[in-house]
Length: 429
View (cartoon, rainbow, N blue to C red):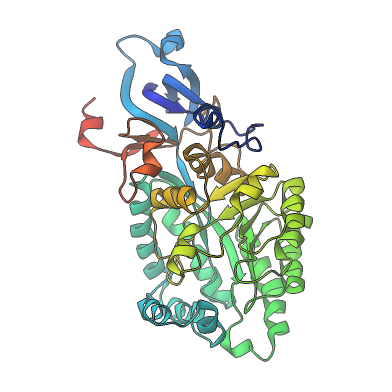
């Protein structure tokens, strides 16, 4: 057992009634403090044997069993729940810097996709890669995420688009999970794009996703979620509904890529199915927002995509979602085509500057909000009994993290009660 003592401790309560009462002229700091569950001079008592949090509260109020010279105390400036990147495509091969050049010369992302490029170019590379190749590259990427404070990383398939290659990708996620100091949770995205050889028989591909891929993924326990890219140039609402329903029948929690390129009704359909999240949401309307709020479907927003694709004039309505009491999460959408970044700290800044989130709302979105997007209550918050995933930072206060962007402020990362990353200054304690 040991104690983490923080000048500022953010507990991130999972339930709050403060999401809807944003007032730009009000006391934003006090509201943020409540949203993040701030405890000044706080302490977390960690039980390594159970890998859980034993106690949380003011340092001076810690229980007797967490005092005394034989109990190690690690002192930091700021501690939060371990960060969660709840939407990534981190298992892939190759790169697409040529498309980056084309887009900057004037070609649109959807034009490249509809011409048979984009996602399908990565599909070609993944099909040529072995499971070991994919595993090795994923492990390397995960370590970069951990150094920022990330302790849970959702990883989607979707660059195989055959049964064997989708299975191969999810096997790589499963294999990497045994080798990295954080949790990887798999998401099946066989409905990411229509393969070239099914362009004239897309119904046959949907049949294959439903009749072959989903049963095999579920039988092998390779994913917790089923996702669909439902948008212009991808899958229709009817196709997405069928795929998500089949996934749900096989125990896979529904999630969806929705309304990124055009308004399709995908997010509202997903809310009707009880989806855990609807992601992107640049073109949703008020009725959809209300449906998501009532269904408890989290809005996962990815501002790096808007920046990378130069679509900052088409932003998801983050404030409208929050005002409707719809939980919001931020994620990197790390992928080789539309968001080639793993920097979740920079995503915090973009959430503030592009969407107008407060620092507290942004930090909540990668902890408690992201946990809800994954339908998890054992992570994303600091309270007795939850998993001991904790990120510690060198920062004078929590607002400093999104303010000073572009670098990691992490000095220690604890996963399942064990320090998995630390700086020399931290470990010297």
